[in-house]
Length: 266
Image (cartoon, rainbow, N blue to C red):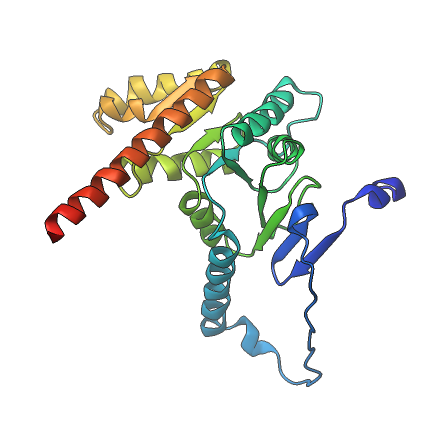
């Protein structure tokens, strides 16, 4: 990154694993205390200590995102260049999701993630980045307004699902496929309900869909109805429509559950 890029970066504040920018910048300050004691440090690498670290990641993530409101997680390749049509499409999606009343959650990196965060931030919405510690880590992109950094993939993946009402998946690699099939498994097994999963890019995802249909479903490894858990499209209009329809169904189910509980209490 050159000097001009550093100069143009938005001001930010760090609170533990949190990175806060723009409207999320705190207006107050907190004293930070550093313990100056020195001694053996092997204990910080033991499994019991890791358990506490893992717990702290869940607590920090829950605390940061608890009041987020409706949100959609957007996935896709970190290697997508800014001049790729998919980048422009993801940026437009970020804007349109904000217009539909949703926050946008990404992995906080470059490529498709940056594009979706950029669109959400430009539209005045909540732009969330959930970063991960990697050997080639590039840090959160400049369009993340609420960022949380994680050491552990499984803690991060929980946040993607727990605080989202659906997934939109652009072309990507292993990480993108990992998140896609994680979501599919949760929906298929009923761990999450009324959770739309939209794949953007019919040419890219067509081969995968053919394989799921001709191999997994044909050999009865999955049910043919499981394929209906996925919507494959090139249209952002259809993407937004699927998300809004699922959101309406979710709210209807919640109202029905509340009404049933009230009736049973009478």
